[in-house]
Image 1 (cartoon, rainbow, N blue to C red):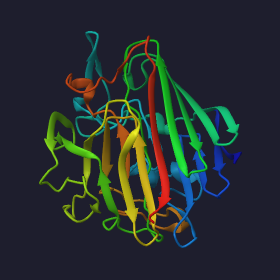
Image 2 (cartoon, helix red, strand yellow):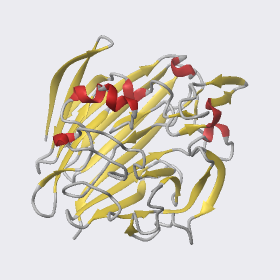
Image 3 (cartoon, rainbow, N blue to C red):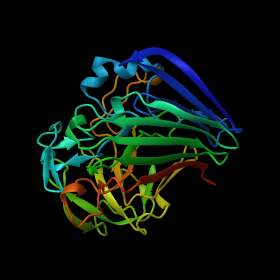
Length: 349
């Protein structure tokens, strides 16, 4: 197992952007930038014995800052915070105090506002080269950042195991009650040559999904997946039942005990023989099939288009800060926020 730090030569807000490379004894390799906690590469061996990168991104760090990319910004491979997904009307109340956030998705707030955790340089606070290589990144979000209350300190550890598991462990503390809902926005494609992910086979261990309004904001209503195009309780091609113009952009309520680490989703691609299993302590998984993805000159000069990847965003229920019946997304000073999500790669034998 090895860990390497490689300076990119880029300074943002006075902080140096570093690439951290994690490699296990099998040659499985993960590259992470401390800017946005971006997973830039996730290279594994497929069933043909070929090395294959299963995440979308760019060949150089500078390309993540390109204005053309940012104009249709898809959060490629980045952490999302303080609050994943949408907050209805960008508004919430904690302890009788009302907070109005920037409305950057119509009238709603998306993924933390104008400048979320995805556009921050995180501190590298710990490196480990033991039996399992890891790096811990830390970011302090100050009181009032994006108009969220409280000084919030977040630790995010990336750990690569010998079993080809990439483990993301989050911890956060605050000095004032605040809203928090973190996730990671990796874009995956398990096919050797990329392309449309409609033939990837998908399973989601969820009997219900969350109703959304016309702006994809959660209303609070749970709807059974049975008999709908959203039924992934059994393995099926992603594109089997979808609306080919819309794909999926939906939150699924996992069939699990709240807080337990359990299998949330499984994705299989036949040509590569790769399986991506996602385990999480979180109560929901949001499946996004990249309807709005339009990125020019990705890795190897390849363009990434609509439905060219899938995201499994593990998190608390979106808009839960405004829906009392959902698990709470309020973090108080006396509490510790924790979350674990595992992306495990294996072969379909």
